Length: 479
Ligand code: UD1
Ligand code: CA
Image (cartoon, rainbow, N blue to C red; front, side, top):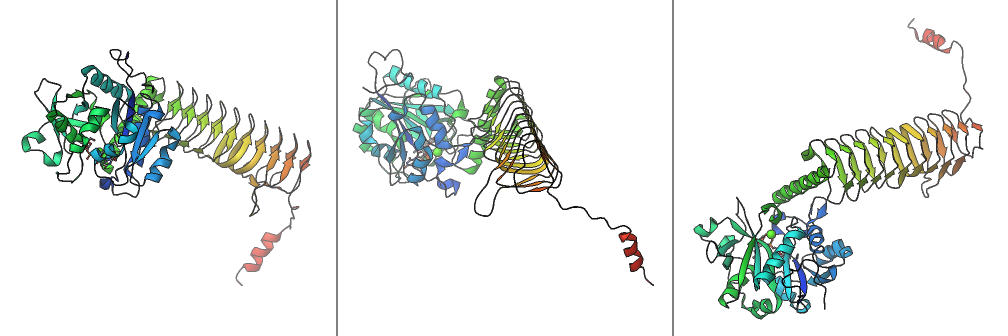
């Protein structure tokens, strides 16, 4: 017997019904006018479909989830394969009812199926579980999720048998609705629970006699009603979570709402965010308490930020791990970087992938790093490029230092041991090693190893010509 998940109502758990989730995600999304399939458009930093899968996997295990894909199916599959859900191919998209018809075979192993729309990303596991429990408690054949919307245009409307009754007469799509039905503000959210045997013994009764010539899953309400089956509706008070994204404008609204939800959640956990509407923080970002986020900061992907940090304006941080007490001055860009506790970055530092900055280290103005380790307390404060370098603790990297790591074919490593002092405007031609405690004189070009505690002077000797300038000026004077 399949696991039914925690969501199942206590009233019915004695019989432990087998519960599947089907996510309808095969549509093209014509209204987005995009090469990218609709469910891969992102809000809150993640594809629409990934949000729906994340909610579903908190109700049933991925093995019981079936994503129905069709338009650009390979691309959709590749984008969410890591979640471990199953895929069902709907190669021709002939409507939401047709999507369920093609999923018939894998679903026959189950008693009930929760049907989710892949383009409505704010649905919560709590609401899915409540909808399921209502369905089981009511012993319904079909249960719809509804919500009241001030602007219901575009959605299917729920026609109840009577105002007080949970029983549903029909769902009327916008295009087929009468003027009176169009005034109904209770909309069909596109989330359902069906009894699997009843769904499939009646689904063949769907027809394509509608303006889109499609099989509408919503018509199952009237079909099952006519067959004297119980069809009920459960209304959520949180109408925000049912909003779908059919247009770019709706995507923008959803994105804004999800990011605000994320900021509110972080603030509730003890993070200070000034002007939250002006920050872009992705859904999976983690930030510890007492960190301060200033306006116009973007924190993206799987970034994790420790406690007591301050991130000043205009920094963009992606997939990075930042320790406690780090101070990031304005305008820094971090990609796949690791920053140790109490480090100081910026302004305008660019830390590219593989940058590993040690505890209390400083990376300053216009410094670019890539694939480097900068040891504890080391400093590279001004105008520097450090790539493919292993730099120890207590090192001072002078302004304008460059590691010449690339010979046009291969990358080479620069090793700088503890307590080294690199004078300003030095070039270190890799592969090269500067031994512990050594000095490199300013403006040196270092092409061979420097021994520990030594001094390397890698520059041409200065020549001075006394009186040269005044002689030149005299020579240029007009006669
Ligand atoms: C649908 C409902 C509408 C409801 C709204 C809520 C129908 C007929 N209408 O309208 O009552 O108010 O959702 O958001 O169901 N899909 C497939 N295969 C298909 C067609 C669609 O998998 O053949 C998928 C789409 O990718 C999408 C979902 O089903 O994720 C809903 O389809 P969509 O075309 O967006 O339906 P709506 O017009 O929004
Ligand atoms: Ca939709």
